Image (tube, rainbow, N blue to C red; front, side, top):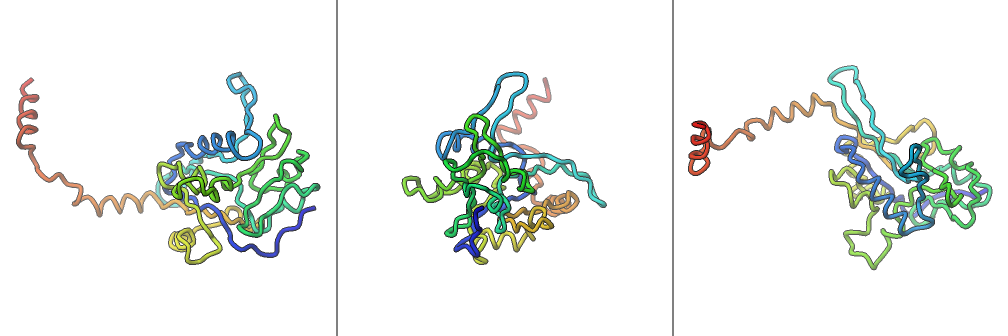
Length: 249
């Protein structure tokens, strides 16, 4: 069995804003593409264009309709991947030592050459964040793109996980959650970020920013309403002429 480090030098992880995520799946596609072409064994698909397709993904987006006690119902898009837990059960249960947590940054990885595909790590993970690649016979999981974040051959702007770089809504953030002065730690403090299923005691590094109630968003729109008023009540110049012309048709 693999031992977890007593502490790590950093706690690199993701902060996901559930208020901003639009469920476009861009993060899913970019993750699949990058990890199929680069780190480790490719993420295979089975019967991709058949009647019963399946495949290996390191990041998935689930959508839920949530009805609060007060206010309107909301559709919440919930991205989920490995949370790189401090007390990762997937590491301690591994019989070959293939799963391990790095001391330098806290990232949980799988040494695929030592993985026998027994699936114990998947059974022990309370988040369902591990998947068996059926073509390769090894367990796959999010690596936080270790082959990107330390790659000096890439421009500095690209040295972040592929999902973060791709997200069009800016809902995904990456950084050191062990540093209280980092941008991600400040974001978690400001928005009261939460752990996923804290009752499991795994101490996930990744955090989620809760969605704000729709009523609160509507109030903000009302506040901005005066600023959104048209500058001119009636169009002038060419637009005014065009408007009058079209009215006569």
